[in-house]
Amino acid sequence: MTSKHLALITVLGGYNDMAMGESGIDDELLIRIQQEVVKYRGKLKIRMSDMTKANFIFQKLKDIDADGFTDRGFSPMVMVLLILEYLTNEEKVFGLRGRFVHFGLLKLVTQLESVKDLRKDIFVHHKVLTKMIEV
Image (cartoon, rainbow, N blue to C red; front, side, top):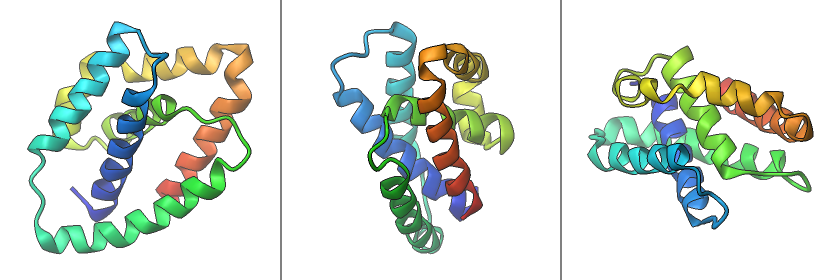
């Protein structure tokens, strides 16, 4: 696992914590995904040398997040799904892939993108994630 992966997982955890604090999420699948993120983060073992570089990247990702969602629609759960989908399907991060592949993340993201009223907001979320990936 790279430092960038660790930084993205840290950001993922923050978004997940925010999403768990939202009262509007009642979908059982989304709740199970949130719970699994919490379990994964709790079991993650990180060496200090990896964490130092990851913290540097994390600071950049926080700035991208703050700039990307200023005066725009934001859903932490959408970011959770997008980051998980990226890390499991694109980067194929071993520990994440095994835990989350059965949730059908790509299908969930595709369903979100197909909702006409959400397209602009989903585009903003994709744009922010793309900037994060490019760090």
